[in-house]
Length: 295
Image (cartoon, rainbow, N blue to C red; front, top):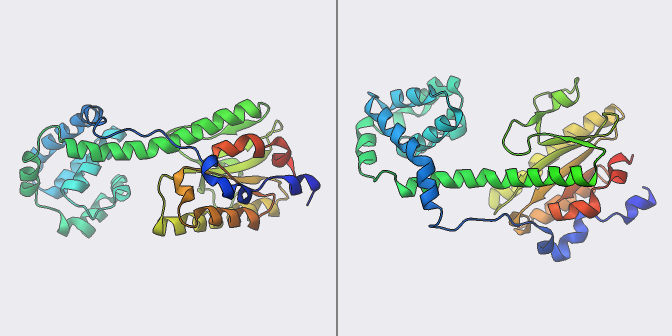
């Protein structure tokens, strides 16, 4: 290990004043958000009511929702469907139209009858403030992650102007490893960003998450998931004699809960000089061209 890498601060070195190194996303107050939530989601609830009236069964209601072409509207309707008709149905599963017959077969027996759905819907005001507030939580959950990647991209471009960073800065599809390395054995592996040098060499692959209040099983799962991804990517890069690094961009108060900080320390220390765990506030003194280009 070089002298420069010995002097480089590690993620572990920040633990004594960890609270000073996390970035808090701005949050909105309740009930201040209600007017905005009701304005945004009233069209969703109106359309849901129309679909209820034209559906002879709850199964048919789900089929009609799956036929809505506008992605955002369809996803919101599916979330409302889950609340009114089938709380056991995974929303992610309902997003795939091809999964609808399987969902009906698996969960259809637990669907609330359409007559009861209509009665429950009619019992609530329009717009339903409670349901609008729930839907707003989904919107806010994704925004923090989008803010994180957008600000990171800006910092990289400002501090390392000769490099190129690619990936969805806010909403958008993840980069697939098969588009970064043409012969990658798991081409559909999604990552959040890639940093390229001026000769188009891949300097770093990145994963980004904003943790608001992770804990319990989620706290245990995240480092384990990262471990398998890191092992897979580094297995490929080392077999091809590539110096590609891995950046874990994690931020938010969830890092201070339980063993999360120590779990990330262990991940970084398991792969010295190959993996770096960062918060936005650490970028200026840790994410350097020297480290990205080091062997």
